[in-house]
Length: 395
Image 1 (cartoon, rainbow, N blue to C red):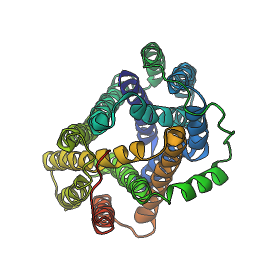
Image 2 (cartoon, one colour):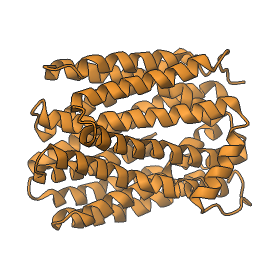
Image 3 (cartoon, rainbow, N blue to C red):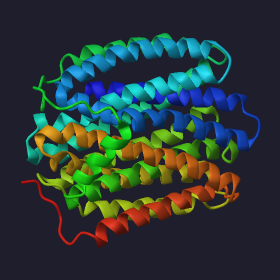
């Protein structure tokens, strides 16, 4: 839990800081949209390329050992990020984002795959609720830290680099205290081709209706989340006229809502996986976006909508993640998590494309993009409600 908290903090602190640095030099809304979409796409690409590799590592080795190794790499990546922030130009900054994405792509399958190995089935939803809470607390503080770094170290943002190196060192120490688990499948064959292995794993997962549906529900969730978070940065700067710190605080409301909603979902499940929360959460997501797209919305109203949006997202995602962890066989949990990570970030890449196309081609306002998110949530929730005649219980 502590290692994941640190990981979420560092991911979001670095990504948001680089976005704010780039937005400060952007000229016009079109360039702002392009830069936000570009950073999101660059961060997402490693999940598509290397998540299956991360799943293979998680199955073939102890998931605890994988996480320790990833934390070592993170310290080097943050040192490089300091150099990228110190030097002018876009390529080095994008490279730092890409490397952080690689780190997180390898980390994710072990992070999620280890929970069902150290928790009994009846505690899985509860554990996921707590994990999501701490994840989004990390998102909150990382996003706030980026806003503070941007304002305090204006023109000297590289100073944030050594701070993030020290925080990564703390994560490395914490990772040594994670419960050591044996390798799930030490003889697992090498899986390094992201296309063929993804296709093979999808064919296997399709045989389990619950797992298949949860996989695509998770992808839809990440599409909606990414589209909201990208658009909030642009909307906050161009419409609400927020500073970097104030803009970050909008994402804090979203992340805090997700954390609280995740804990509520975990406790509401009471020893089983309560799939009925998925359509309820989707409806809440859709309703929350309605005021956000209205002309003249105030910052306070928008902040409340972000919190309710996050709360609904927490209700939506906890049962979905629990299904993904519970259904696979022990020796394939890492592979399934790698597949899910790849699809999640295909969803995020799609969100980056939709953000750009909606603004540039169809000239949709940044406020109306939130309505696109609401419609997408209704589609996901309807799919879950219509295609399922019963509800999952962990046995």
